Image 1: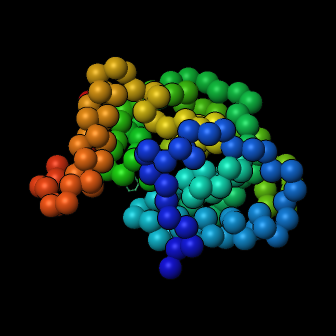
Image 2 (image 1 turned 60 degrees about the vertical axis):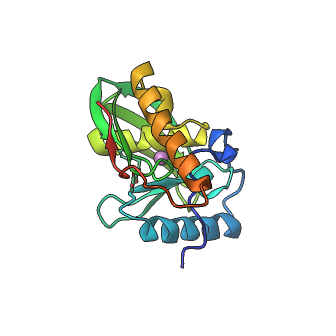
Length: 180
Ligand code: QAP
Ligand code: CO
């Protein structure tokens, strides 16, 4: 069973800036292991940041093609170009937004052994880096939407929150929403 519950929109932990990791010790190693368990038990998740499991540390993990990667204290040192992609987030289940961000990013971080890593990534992986770094700064995809998209997204989130409060399970709008 996954050791953590994935925090979703409305949880204040998702809006706080996470703290730098000062020492990569056994507690960090255990946290990372538990984050992977949580990621793999999620429905089709590819990346997860520590704040999404309620931990205010600057760590994210991902697995794009059966290769688990952990990045600690990551920073983007350079970015270039523009690329639109339908982004999703485990903390905003069922919501996908077309978002334009830089296409290529150069990220530096530390791995679990404390070694410095330097990675240049474009397209999907470049997007993942930017998305997960946003989580560490307390930002969700909603901040990248235009007014109209944000209104549509907030309406769905509000309806869901209300449906979750209703004693009688009201007919719920289909989970998937793709905003144009
Ligand atoms: C972040 O996203 C990301 O809505 C990782 O119902 C975003 O793992 C990486 C997911 C864009 C690359 C590009 C979302 C699963 C997973 C959902 C995820 C859902 C089930 C999102
Ligand atoms: Co996310």
